[in-house]
Amino acid sequence: MTAAGEPLDVRGLLAPGEPPPPDRAARERIGVLTILLNNSVMGGYDRSMPIAAERYRTHRLSGDYTSVASALGAHAERVTGAADIAPAIARAAKITMDGRPVVLEFITRADPEVPRYFTPTY
Image (tube, rainbow, N blue to C red; front, side):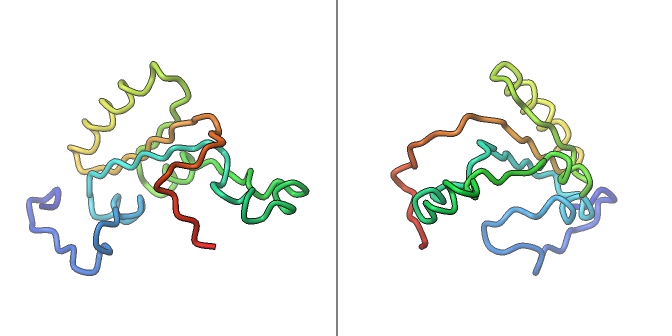
């Protein structure tokens, strides 16, 4: 249902299992929570492009995702401390119930171990 109580037509809005991007979610008043784990490292790049990673730090590309999400109309927060996680999620839950998308960007440390379920596509 839309904020006006009308049925929301989502045909063609999303690929199966894909959350809407923040700008579309904001326009359609879809209260979706996206949690982004930002460790400032591109996974696997140091193994697939070792010379570029060493010389040009191509695996260390990052951005200010919170600012981007905010500019697209989402409520966005950057969370840097473990004690701030639960309060941020609680705030996000309330905001999404009002039909506004939320992006929480958790700043984490780089982990040199790639999860077992990671399957490189290169």
